[in-house]
Length: 78
Image (cartoon, rainbow, N blue to C red; front, side):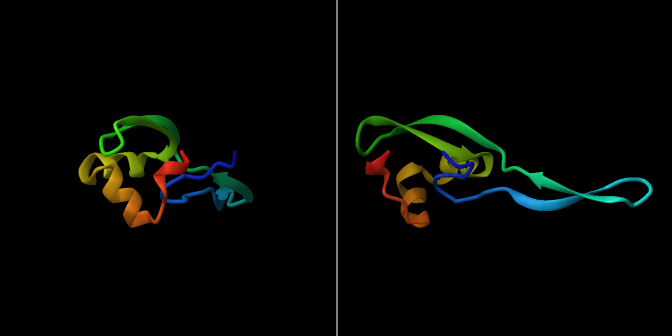
């Protein structure tokens, strides 16, 4: 499985590490992803998703069904 959020599709960002002497080396900034079991009340079952922490906070505010619809994700495949 790739390191992507299953709802928001967040992924790693390419960046540079800059030392004190200003030497620049490539660095990969990974998204903060967590495996999370979330209760889906409309279907009365648990759904296990690989989510970014930003998506987890948004689900707590909007609800799983509404946020998945906004992101264009079909929850029946999980």
